[in-house]
Amino acid sequence: MKNIAPDILKRIVRIWHGRTKTTHAEAYRQFVIETGIKEYTSIEGNLGAQIWQREEGEITHIWTVSWWKDMESVRAFAGDEVEKAKYYADDKKYLLEFEPTVAHYDAFDFKTFKQ
Image 1 (cartoon, rainbow, N blue to C red):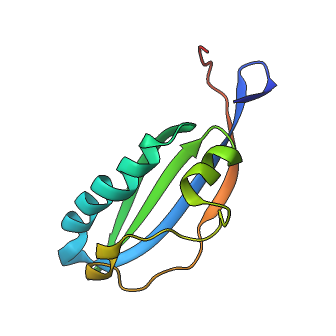
Image 2 (spheres, one colour):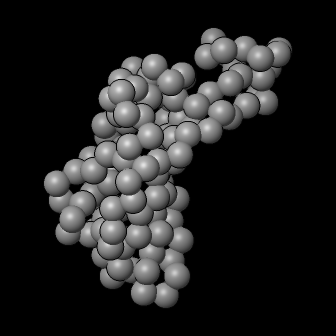
Image 3 (cartoon, rainbow, N blue to C red):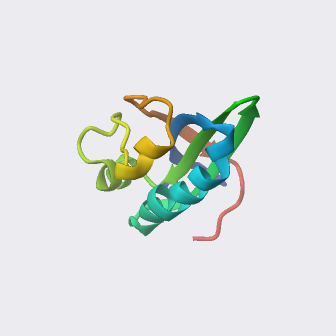
């Protein structure tokens, strides 16, 4: 992690978004835990991951938000095309469409971290 200033650490946040039927949301969330989250957290340089979810009637939005040490760590997960969304074979059972890209952000964490 790169120190920007004392007690401020720069990280990379990768956000993926998908939509599923609300009736499939619980099963899809479990699928994401067993595939994407498991793979994210197995990669050296991954600092954690979250699933965000929002129900809008018959559609539920799912975001995976993963925290990374640097872009090299993201590349270890995503390959050279880091902006390209990564899908698993059974995603087709749940997703309403396949968004082609993900977003990456620089995140500045203002907590004090013990290293």
